Image (cartoon, rainbow, N blue to C red; front, side):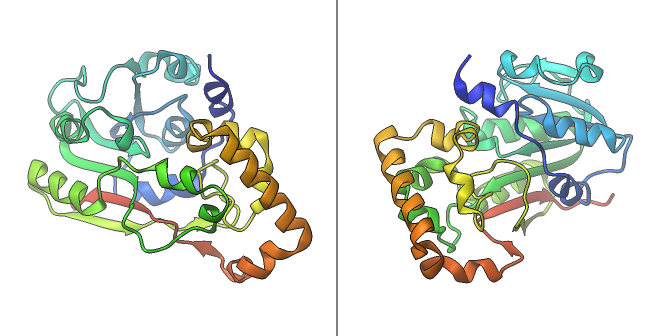
Length: 256
């Protein structure tokens, strides 16, 4: 088991993301597929809201950590060939996993196929977002490679609309100052977070990054924080209550 896999298990889901997603979903106790669920952190939060949740991931190592209460609902499979009947679930949620699938277009087709109400809710990163994160000054390849293979939000939304026959919408999901989950931008106003080995180990972008570059960036960041140069350059960001770092929620527009 990799260090990343072990650290990922310790990540905590942010309930505010689930709150934002449920506005676009059929009401519980409808059946929901959590596609690319990992260890089931968000699966558990949806279940607590009353949804009948299926957790699906290609990694059996991750699925074994899905809470025991969901044991009958764990499925190990690839997103491009879901072992579900047509219309077997009411809706599909996919949180920052679309870019990890072998063929995102095929995965979307499968999502539409298994959703009886064509209710699809995707959390993605918009690589065309004009906002540039200060992290690039310290770890340029980490940010550059994080979602380099991710299709644009427009491509995803247009393809989803053509598959489902329903109009799609794109909503900004800003990251709060105290965002709990260890996303790459979670420390936008907490630079000390990136000095934490535990945080970096739980983030796939850092886990895949060049060690030499990361170590050099850490030294620079730590020095700039101690000397006050970080606050001098980026201190204005501390006045924000939330930050648009490029995360988007793409949904099919349908009546609840």
